[in-house]
Amino acid sequence: MRILVVEDNPDLREQLTKSLEQAGYAVDAAGNGEDGQFLGETEPYDAVVLDLGLPKVDGVTVLKAWRAQGKATPVLILTARDRWSDKVEGFDAGADDYLAKPFHTEELLARLRALLRRAAGHATSAIDCGDLRIDTRAARATINGEPIRLTSHEYKVLAYLMHHRGRVVSRNELVEHIYDQDFDRDSNTIEVFVGRLRKKIGQDRIMTERGLGYRLIDPAETPSA
Ligand code: CA
Image (cartoon, rainbow, N blue to C red):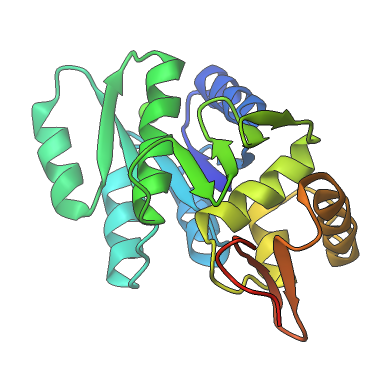
């Protein structure tokens, strides 16, 4: 899952980026509203953390512009503590959640997980596909309760497929959602990650749809052809 952080305070921006990366997300960051708006318009994010008080273009204007373009990406706004009117304006502009500054990083991470889950139609922090489970809180995967050791990229691929289980996900979509902007992207590496994942979770859980991409299935539910 790939997150955009738009925050003009460099310390907070860096701290947020670091925490999100440690939590297993690919992260891009922008330091003003103009850059943030552009990234949000041109890159496919799974969620956005958007500060409202931003130089060049303020957060509410950025959010309104995205929504006017039909972008439905979940957006969590960061507001000043004493500005209740900011929250109202933010929600009216299309925000999905908010946090007042200062906040605890753990709360931000929990709220983001909830937004990502809801956007994908899941109700809890664990997502199951048969006996395969990912715990999005701990960024861990298990089969039948047994932990599976995954590298961070393997987990990112699996988490994206789990959030969109049953649907075909193209290689290009995976590339766009597991790497940040600065990463030297190579869609061939996706094939390598999927190959390694299959070795770890079982060959029959990730189907290759020729020319289209990959689909995560529960092999117990779907008889193989
Ligand atoms: Ca600010």
